[in-house]
Image 1 (cartoon, one colour):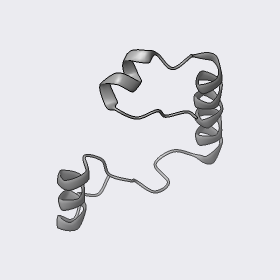
Image 2 (cartoon, rainbow, N blue to C red; image 1 turned 60 degrees about the horizontal axis):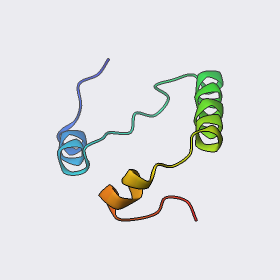
Image 3 (cartoon, one colour; image 1 turned 90 degrees about the horizontal axis):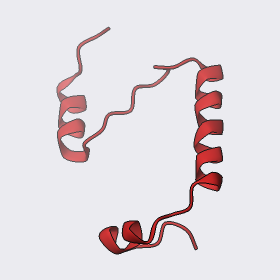
Length: 59
């Protein structure tokens, strides 16, 4: 694994995350997106979430 560049470190420190291209194989990404989609449908958004973060995620 290569060391992050100064620009990548700056981005991470500013945004709190770093995008790593091709870190996971495409089939695994598809599988994880399916899991997230199912959770989004199956788990109701709790009222405290909207109150705590001040915005509705779903309309």
